[in-house]
Figure 1 (spheres, rainbow, N blue to C red):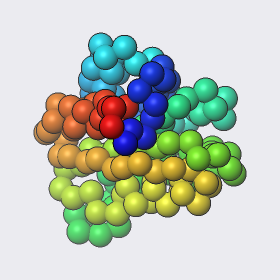
Figure 2: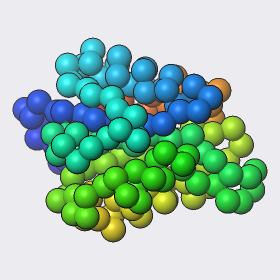
Figure 3: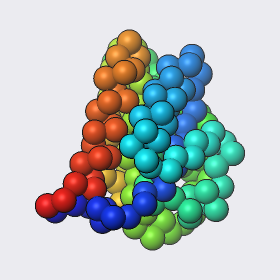
Length: 154
């Protein structure tokens, strides 16, 4: 069964922050691939995303690099944490979200923090994706294929 009706013109919002450029490269690849598949894609920096941007989207992707030490303390980047803590409405009305992260060593619980913030505000968290920053193309492809599958007929 498809999660999103097959005939729905999906409005996708990609919210992200990037510090060394790796997450931004994934976002650029996602935007290009999704637009080729005829999805409407809007890209926003995590710090400038508003409730209106979220309201207009059918699906929101949140992208972040992983911050922290090699074996402990991993978390989303500051801009994404700030957005999750103070920039989201209290009720997301079952809006659909996907989280993704780029990392050097290990993603650990980074995306669990994103997931928990979404679920605690009545959002629907569909999935998490992460990959080493050296495998940006693979990460973008995996996310694109997942989104296409969300609208696949039963």
